[in-house]
View 1: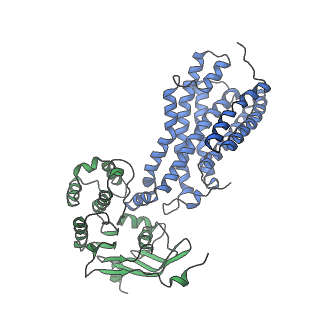
View 2: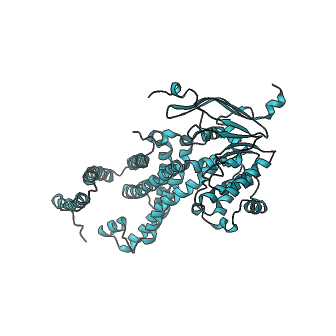
View 3: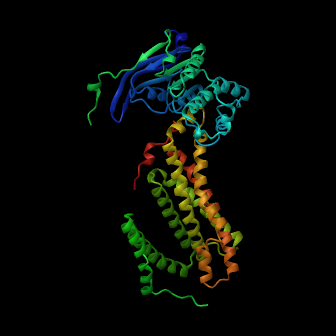
Length: 224
Length: 264
């Protein structure tokens, strides 16, 4: 393998297996994500799609196999680097308690996020996501599911990272917004995307789609 | 003014009062009969022995022994705090006892030295009761503080992980939980301070007045003790949580799951 192609490899899952409570749900999963590649992960719920994304950030450890980020094994040291470089957006963004404005400021006070919150950008992304200005003064916990979801997307965009893990990020949006968000992300050819979504708006002919299946379900099941 | 002793037979009249909680518990099926009896039994035995020991210790009034007694109180306060918070005693005992010992001894010695101006800083009559009041409150503050802290992180695990994904360091991600649990830990103390003298006549003042002291002396002690309690509660709750980080979190910045396993 040439050095160049190695450098292009951002994320690599090597023979990764997932078990929930001693039950194998996925095994021998392999996937290489190159820079600027956009990949859609599909598969029935409970198969471990979300877990695959979490593993990349060191939130759970694979029961078997290895995960690489920039050719380095994800471990207790490298996971902190991955967390600074990858933007992770979840279905039910939970920022905690307090005004949206204060919660945003807290995120941009983290030492890893050297840049301050750019208010110009904030306004423009909010317009894009059809979020009202006064939402900043509201309590995060009182927002609707769709609003919370958009705040999650907003934060990811503001963090200005170029690798995105998007886990059902448009599930609570209306059709028009689903399309708008998906189009926005998919138009950026300089971004690397790993998308989990049941929404059709994310489907593109050119996009690589990975279907996750439980392999040898019956035999791999460990009896209690 | 004489102090009326309570005879052991008249103490029985006090126990009669327990018929009321037992009755309520029966009627509404609170199922608290057993724990009521257990608690009262434990308290009586513990206080009986404490009375004997304290009598002995007060008569002897040996500084080293007094300090050792306070050390034992700290030991049990630390153990009970972790136990009551439903957390892993083995994992947390060392950081918690260090935090509780440091904050309480520091406040205790300061008060004895600079406020009460004691000649003998380790005088049993001052050291032990004041330590008891500080530790009792510290204990409650720590149960709430450390318990809320780790249980909130567990309950809001996704929120915690999400902040890590946003680039937060472990301390940065834990900060909102630290704030929240510390507030919860000291709120009752603050409310207590603000209502004292109007709603309640605190135990120590009552004791001093019953013992024949002037209310004007008693209030000065009360002000001192309330401030000391507030300081030692917030200090020990803060230090306990911070000191527990090393054993409670792993290198990934996640809470060790065995922290939630009760043991001992």
